[in-house]
Length: 151
Image (tube, rainbow, N blue to C red):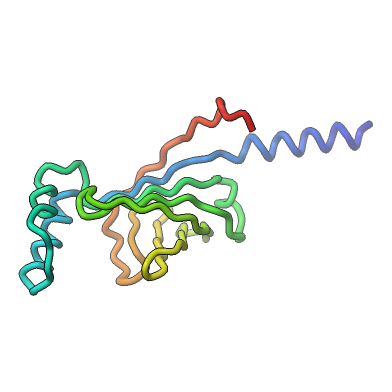
């Protein structure tokens, strides 16, 4: 009986610590427009409608990572859902991948073309793609309400 009670306490305390959260990382529309204009000036074919969309867009680039925060206390990998919006919201892609953490950073690996590795500094919540290594995204953490889930 004592073993059952101990198991129930350990099991329920682990579930209380595990929370589903979203890490939302964005680059401003102004920064993305400047980047696109620079690419266009260097001969890259950037459609004018995308550049004009950046003038009124809420954001330039956005990555949303949905994951269980219990992984942040472990050195193992866990699953993550990823939504990426780019070109000032013009294109949206959804991926699945993995999340891992260290004392200083959270790393998201997911399939894109090519495979992407997105890193977030745990102290500053600045993030960016591992290559080229710029942490030009500003991230916020948001709770996800799972109370109405049936399973």
